[in-house]
Structure formats: C-alpha cells, structure tokens
Image (cartoon, rainbow, N blue to C red; front, side, top):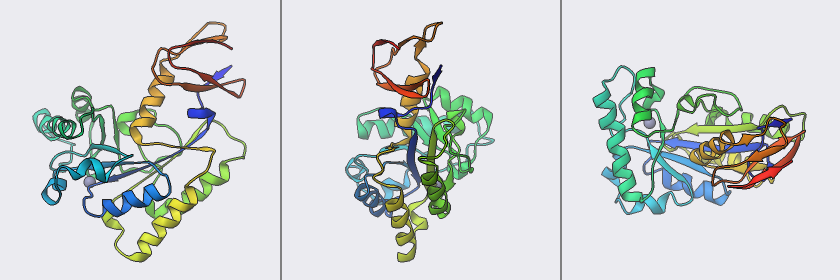
Length: 261
Ligand SMILES: [Zn+2]
C-alpha cells in the first residue's frame, strides 16, 4: 500500500506563512522569519514600488517567495477577463522582469474570487492562489482555492495544537498555513506575539519549512508518480525527489528514477 502523505525527508508536517500588501513592515517581518529559519510567501502589489526602489525587491525577501497579489489590489470577483488579465498577467510580466524567474503564485486581494476569475488566472499562468478563509491542516484539494489554516491572531493556538499532533496518532500529513498582513503588527506587543509564534513553531526536525510555491511544486511532483499495478515499482518522472509511505514507512523516490519497493 502506497500513501501520499510524506514531505521531503519523509516528514509529515509542514509549516508555511503568507503575507500580502506589505510594504514597509515586511522588512521587519522577513527578518523575523529569517531569525527563526522560517519560510514565507510575500504577495505584493504596485504600492510596493511607490515606496521602494525596485532593486530592494530581491534583497528584502531573499530566501522567501515573491508572488502576485494583483497590481492595484482589485477584488477579482465579478470582473471582466480583461481586468483580470491587466491586474495579474501584467503583474507577472513585471515581477518576472525584476526577479529573473517565473512568478506563478498568488493571493486574492480581499480574498475575493469567483469561478470565472479562476479560469482566467489559470490561463494567465497562475498555479495556486490563497484565500482568506480558514481551512484545516491539510493540503488543498484545489490549489486555486488554497484556504490557509488561520490568521496569525490565532497562530499560537493553532501552532500549539499542530505541535501536539506530532508524535500522536497521525492520519495523513499536516500543514500549518498562517497568513496575515505585516501592517497588522502595530504595537510592540503585536510583534512580541509574532516572535513567540515564530519561536514556538521553528527549528523542529519533524517539520518541513517551505514557501507556498515549494509546497505546490512538491505536491505536483508527487501527483506525477507512476505506480505499477502491483504497487511494487514506482517511477518519478519529475526533477524533484519525493517521498511516499509504503506500508506506513517513508520511502524516497529520487528524481527521474524508477524504484523497486
Ligand atoms: Zn491584500
């Protein structure tokens, strides 16, 4: 029996963060994530460039993912395809020009979207998009409706429950996905809470710390695995090493290789 419930190195727990809008408070937040070896995705809009030099984009978020949020922070429900294309496709071109790499992730402005928006976004090359809904601790069924676990105001409570589940009886993998806005961290008490959350969840060798796009790419590589009818041979056609459970034990399927279990 093969089960797809493993992250890199056979881990079953994953933590990710997502912060939109910025821009100035993101500097302090990125430094806090760096201090605790955490990974985040930062969704920016054109306001970033009103207050910052383009050259700071890469350095400020080094080690994290930069993703779309729409150029003008327009809610994407009830919009024409043209508006969505101008808002997102044009932003991709701009960000990719600055960063020199594909930018395929997104978070919905105001958390708003509809099925038509999703259809257009997929054609614009967006592969996942984060909502503002509260979800569970699972990977999303649909990456275009990626509901985070919680806002950071509930972060310590959820992180405590998440950590408690490590070592407990586990059914499937678990993802703790925390979102928020850096500008919501207004007082030193707010920052102390954020630091407590980061400290609580960090440097645990049972947890894979990843950006949103890293989780998406890893999951897609797992979905591409080719398994023999007897479930004893597995081929990994991707360029990413992946892990699965074979009779509940972690097994590595190296990139491009065929493994006999
Ligand atoms: Zn926003």
